[in-house]
Structures are given as C-alpha cells and as structure tokens.
Length: 616
Image 1 (tube, one colour):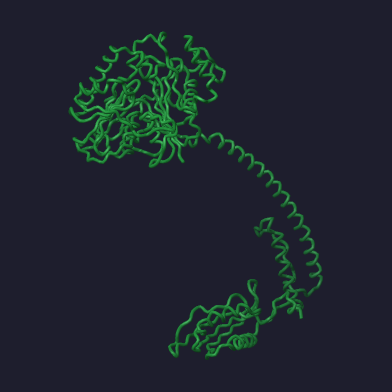
Image 2: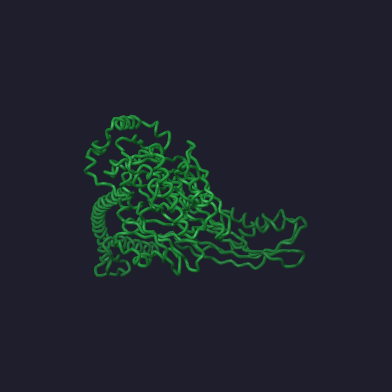
C-alpha cells in the first residue's frame, strides 16, 4: 500500500495530508496544520524539526510539497502546440518579455493548460523565484523529506477538485467557480463542466487579514495545532506543555534555545519562503476570529468581495450561478458575498476525512493525490539545479562504500592471483625440465641403434615454434603419447578393437524380432535391410548401423498400431543397443489397412572395453 504525504508550505504555517492506497482507492490516514511563530523562521533546522514532529508520518513512498500561488507571476500564453516537452524547451524564451522586473536566470517557469475554448492552446504560465524553491527544499531536508515534486497551490487545488464528479460538457453555462480561503491568500478557480481548468486567480487576501494590526504581545497566541490526536499523546507533550507555560508568562520559549545539534539558532540563516511578513505570526484561524472586532470583519469582507468580483470579471464569468467555498469558512461571509455578487454561495465538502474524522485541507489533500499518481496538474518546479535526483543521492554513500570495497577486493584478488600464477609458472617449468630430461634419455637410447627409424624419436625441442611456456609440457606429453601408441601397434601390444560384424548384428536383430513378434497374431514382413559397420573413434565405440523396414498387417484387434511404439522401446532395453532406436514415421500402404515404417538402430556386436566379457 503506497503512502503519500502532501505538504502545503506557507510563510505563516503549513498544512499536511497523508494518504494510503492508490490513485483509484485511497484513505486519509492523517491530516492537520500548524502555524509558525516569528522565531521559527530564524532557523531552517528548527522549522524542519517542527514539520517532522507535527507530521510524524513514518515511512512514506512519496512526498509532494505545494507552495502558495500568491506572489507568483502568472501569465496566459498562446502557443501553436501543447506538447509538454516541446513547450518546456521554449517556455522561458517565450515568457521572458513579460518578466522585465525579474532575472530570467533566477526563476523557474512551468505551466498548466487552460481549456478556454480558444482555437490555439492557452497556457497558464507560473514563474517562481529559485530562492523560494531552495529555501523550501532546505527546510524539508531538515524534516527528513526529499520531495520529488514542488508545485503550486492552484495545481494541487485542481487535483483535489477533480475528485468531485464532473460529467457535463465543457460549455460556458456549465462552468462552476470555486473559492479557497487560505491564511495569507486565497484562490479562485473556474472549472468547465468536464472538470478541465478554465481560469485561475490568486487573491492577495486571507483570513490572517483579520489579525492585521493586533498587538500580539497582548493577544493570546495560539500554539501550533497538532496534526492528529496521537501526536498530542506523544512523548513530546512535556516540551509542548513547557512552551505553553512559557507563552502564558509572555516568554518566547524558542528565542534563546539552542538548536538540536548544540549550535545556536542564530547561527542558521533565516528562512525565505515568501509571503507577507507584516501579518502577525503564531495566530490560528480560531484566534483570529476571536480577536477581530465586528468592524474589522466587515472591512475584511468588503475588501474580499471586491477582490472576488474583480477576479470573476477578469475571467469573464457573468453574475448568477453558484460559487463554492473551501478552506477557512468565516461566519457571515457567505451571506455577504451572496448580497454583493448576486451568486448562490455554498460551502463545499470534498467528502474526505481522516481516522479522527478531521477533513484534510484541500490543497494539502491535492498534493498528496499527486504523490499517488493523480497527474491532473503536471507542474513541477524541481528543474535545472533542483532537478530531482533522490535515487542517486540517497544511495550515494552506500554506493561509494561498495565501490571502495570492490576496489579493495579486486586489488587483493589481483595480488593473490598474481602469486598463484607465479607459483604455477614455476611448477610448470620444473615439470617440463624433468620431463624433458626423461624424454631425452629415451631418445639417447634409441639413437644408439644405428638403424633406428626417425619416427621413434620423440620431439622435445619447441624452440622457434611460438609455443607458450605453459603449453610446452602439454605438447611434450602429447608427443610421448603418440610415440607410445605407434610402438604398441608395431609390437602388437595395443588393445585394438576389431571391426563390428554385420552378420552378428543380423543374428541379434532377427532373434529379437522373433521373440518380440511371437505374441502378435497378424502378419508382419521385414524388408529393405541395410547394415553398415562403423569403426571405433574417440567419440563412439565400434558398432553396426542397422536400418530396415517393417510392415505390419492388422490382426483384427487394433494391436498392430501400438507395435510401432513397442519395437523401439524394446530395442532400447537391449544390452547390445547403442544410443536410441527409433521409427521416424509410419505410413499406410493401402492393402488391408497395413502400415509400414523404417527402424533405425545401432547395434554393438563386440563387447565394450573394460567389461568382464571384454577381458575373456
């Protein structure tokens, strides 16, 4: 079962969702969120530890991180093609003229395709600074996470909304608008009836605006919310309670605490994730609602309604219809928007919850879906120097150690083999010298006879023949063996095998057939005899190749057909059969239903050497 962790990382906090299963069937194992205090952003190590302690996801197969779309440059670009690989090759060059205020070498661009009914493909291009990507990856590295995918919140929200049923045609009257209210910013997304993306607008307002200008020193600051109940029951409760007590006394618990590795947090550089630093830190949504007065809420809702109206107008969405709200639901905002926009406003529930009956944050939920293989939005900002190399990086240490071990092993093996080769070469030379002396003594005795044949001299000198030193002893042994065989033949001492007798093969075969066919009641005929005597060689004994035809007539019982299988089987059981006897095929001859076949068998008429019969 795959486990995917989606993290929505913002400058004032983060949300996460842990899914288990596959893209078609999954469950929410865990979800939650945490707000950051200002001191948390002074150290990437502290921030990473906070994320790791909050998620406590255990072993996950995939991690996908989502960054806010607010502050990201987004432009619509018309292209004559939409093939992703081709677009990515020219995307920066095409959008560079729109980025006059940015250094093109310090940003990464990616896109998602819009289905706005135009004749040519329309691409929604998003441009993100490399500094934000690097800081986010560094924080997650301290959280022991290495996400292969870094995307933006509108891509993850699109993946989450596509889990809803969409079965209408992509017509203007079927378009539906969705509004996600976040902490620092909000997202407005319009989908066609078939679920394809029509348009996106990032609104620079979130629920943290309710707490802008508050005196945080006098406010009751919220502690980071737990991701799940089991985190609250973890062994870290003591430290959490200590921080809570410190906060109640007006003490910033982490301001002067050393980092985990013993260094001061000030030694670590400040985190640069982006966002609006003028908004208060450490404020939860519930605390912001509690501290904001009615005038602040009314002012926020008026500004928010104006931003929503401006976004709908920019995307060409007429008044009327429905607008679905996700994320933070501010009391009274639905009625306020209905009155100002002339639309039906309704909260949207994605129908998902974890084991604690907590609904996951939609953007973090969509990021986790991406990790399970839901590729509704293929955006990924791990490009160029951030290109994902997890497989190699994670095994770089073990691979290096294994490579060093192999080098040491091969070095030791080389030394040992070299020593063995030296010893074998020495032994071979010693044997050759001794054997050469023995052969020369024999040759000397042969030469004492004035009429000795030249064939009796065993060649033992290989000078000038290009024979390797290690082959000299083998060549000398071969020459001595040939000389011995020639001498044995001359003196009649060699155990030469006489040619096999075809007549004996005939006798053995006829006796066998008479015994084998004695129980058959029908007629049978032997014809087309061919016997060939084969001399012995290094690969086979002397034998007779026998080939003859046999025709069997039916006896009325049907037994004659099986005889063609029984005869080879019986031949293979004979002691004088060499190899395998067989009848390649049979054929009918038309007379009384008879069949004929050719039998091939090798017959051994002489007793094999080294057998009791051969020694008689």
